[in-house]
Image (cartoon, rainbow, N blue to C red):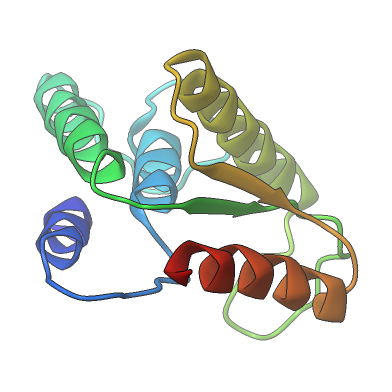
Length: 137
């Protein structure tokens, strides 16, 4: 359902910026659906998983082709307990590694619109603005 919503949004007209995108959907879906993952909670452990993951991967590739830019904000800041996100460091590490694997795979597939963002909050905002406003020229 989440990937379907990402696809619907990717098909909208106009200039749109999302703070979560198809890569998030793919990474977290793999984490939740992996029957060998001892860190996931309540994952599915039956034959439907392969079909679900295949569908998610198909949608993912259809979606990322529609993006003008993919900003990958490197997780350099410390985990903060905000009451809604997990602070499990093993979970965070696994998700971070999966994101890095997906970014590397996109680069191998010659997606040239990947911009890696790092630094302080102000530096990150400036890097994104520079790309967005340069694209409009």
